[in-house]
Amino acid sequence: MASPIILRPLAFGDGRRGVPLIMRLNTEPLLQVELKVRGRTIHVAGQEGIRNPELANYRGSPMQGFTAAGSALEAFVNFAKDNEFKEMGN
Image: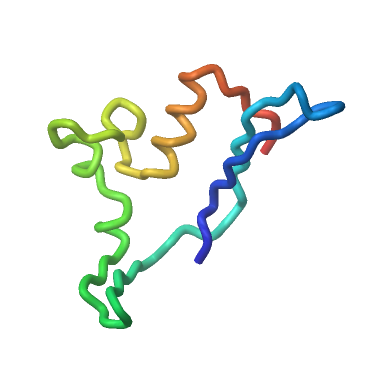
């Protein structure tokens, strides 16, 4: 599955002006992930390994303060909003 987040610069007019764009795609939540190295599965995680409050609460977690649920997607969107990105629709 591709990322549900698209990051890209958006140019205006002659291309000398632009803004950063974050587009969140509407996708079904992941139920399971599988990590493969050279075609061999080395780890499988279910929902508790994908979204878990403990993922945001360990010391130094990049998600700390941005998600109570332990969702990387939610943390990223909240981080962007805290850094002056504006939501333009649902």
